[in-house]
Amino acid sequence: MPLYVVLAALAVILSIPILWHAVALDRAPNKQVTRNLRTGLADGGDLRGLVLSQSPIERILRPLVQSLGQTARRVSPAGMVEALERRVELAAVRWPVERVLILKFAAAGALLVAGLVYTSVSGSSTGLLSALAAAITGYLLPDVVLSRLAASRQLAITNSLPDTLDQLTICVEAGLGFDSAMARVAKSGDGPLAQEIARLLQDLRVGVPRTEALDALLARTDVPELRQFVHAVIQAETYGVPVSKVLRAQAAEQREKRRFRAEERAMKLPVKVIFPLVFCILPVLFIVVISPAFIKLTAGL
Image 1: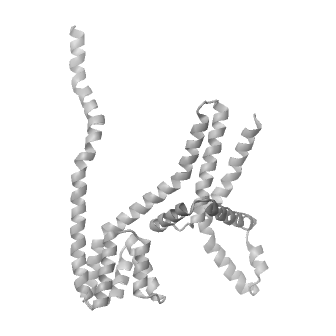
Image 2: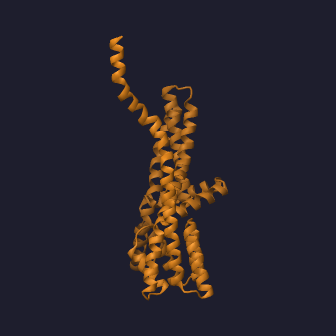
Image 3: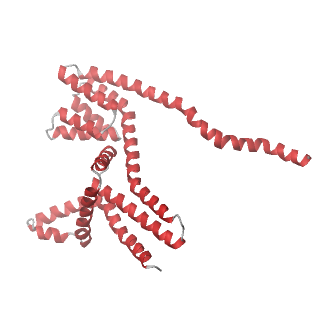
């Protein structure tokens, strides 16, 4: 077996534990923080004891992963890193951007090496192009997954916004304050919008001004309807308009927009059904209907 095939296989084998550690690293901080706190209380905060209390894998792989993440961030274009950070924020993924970059490069390298190994074994003339295509696919696949997650999350926020506004309106008209009504909705609700409202309340409890907390909410999302609602609430507080009237008007408007979106999707359905109907259903139907007559005609001739 050629030497480069052995080296390529060895590189793939060595990249698997690094990739696994980069993927599974988000479970480690909570356990590590608990262990550090307990060790600090017991030993008086000995830094050497804290470091030695970690497993050898954590002491070796964690700095390696951090170094690889910083290197991947430096070699990546600034615009691509900013776009990736925006996707991670919209998708509400807990991974840092450096870990996603490591995953992108690791997937691209693993698929490239696998393609080269397959080319050397099969002797295909187009193996190099296939390996390059596989590497590009592995590099772009995390971006596609994050984009899909972000789009589905923003759509869930858009669909749940009218119901959430109805709940806020009922709570405020029943006598609760706006913050208490949001806390009630965040506690009883489920989904991305309830999570964002809970995070907004956390910002308010730690002393962040309401305007800055609402701006941070808009920065974490990309929903025009939510932006319109937040701006209406800010203007109501600025000019002294009752919040209950603003909430009722916004709830009615958002319900109307949701109905229009449903009608728009229903109008698009016939156009989307044309291609499966023409290329999948009608040929099978013609075969089932015409085949018996064609068989009888052939037997008669």
